[in-house]
Image (cartoon, rainbow, N blue to C red):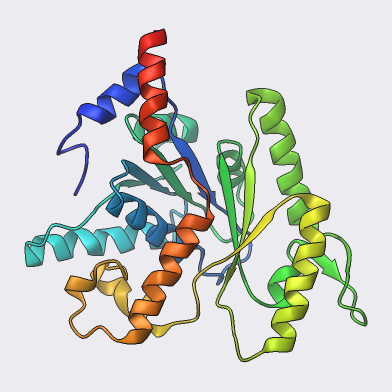
Length: 285
């Protein structure tokens, strides 16, 4: 449940000690890549692992992450079952365009802040990228999506040059390094892997490996193409909520493991290290 309504001692301790939360920003200017689904599953998975998670939806129009978590709140109220729940809000520039102010407020006492951005070019998404400790760019496993970050030669399938989005991220990372002295871990998430298309999968993988060396991102596997992800949305459930799913098949168990491996692949600071940082900061203060 909401850690701010429950045991808030550690959250307050983190806030007072000056330890900063880890910001994970999910960003891709192309829609239909599973970005919001991945973001909400990451937020819930981290909350289920005992982390204090705050989430902010920057897509005021579609609000997929926000509606997903709204559905989760309704399921909790309807069934009476306790489910891990991040604190969450939606950014609405028509009411208040102080994005950094809202991020600072929602991050108070949190270990992790998950930010879901719109699937389009958006000035607030660019601003959020400057706060990212981990920048996650989900793409479908195809050359159509790869074109967003690198132009591919039609004959050789080799990368000819980075595309506009890779240059945008490069500028964002450079600016963050200058203004905050901080590095950004850029993670490219290969969603919807189609294992039957072995040749295409191999070519995309080779192109990504080449491009990653040139522009500096890591590649990890994401979530597969599974109907279950769409079916869970109306109830706000995730594959970690197996007790709520009823008939759980082998495919669901495999998908759950897929989710866990994806979150582990993000390489986030572990909770023990965050607690130690809090203790050190408190002693130093």
